Image (cartoon, rainbow, N blue to C red; front, side, top):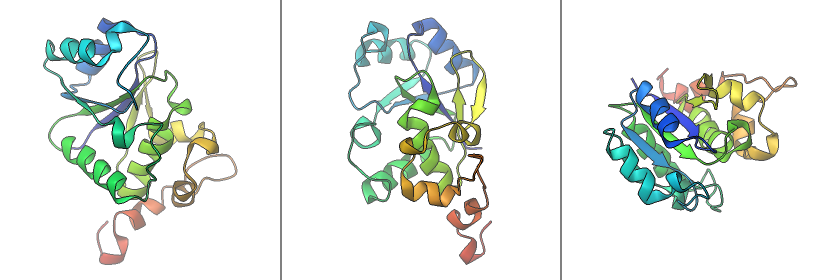
Length: 181
């Protein structure tokens, strides 16, 4: 089972943040911030990596390709390879992609990465909200500004008049033409 969580550190305490990850069995945190720094010292790269290690969670920074400030488009082979790597990493244990923004509807981790995972690979993800509840990517994207979702993904996701997602394109994205479902 491939499980991918999306989480924003916002101004959480380090212990609350790690609790959300351990409660879900996350074994790898992929940092998708363009720069692995924070005004909250517990979320600077070195401090975060050390805190995660004490709980058996590995850390990987991939903001150079998956960061919100990168100019790499979703149809770029480099971005595509990064998504395949994320899915592969999640094939054995739950993983989480982390950025700084507290509300996933206001962040590239949902609007670009989460949308690309589902639109291009049929891979759902789940946002861990600030209050500790989970929200499926479909629900997050329904409340995400279209400005945050690349246009090529909007077409594949078929955003409707009520901003609901029609998931029929998932079959096409997964290779319906070659008989796979």
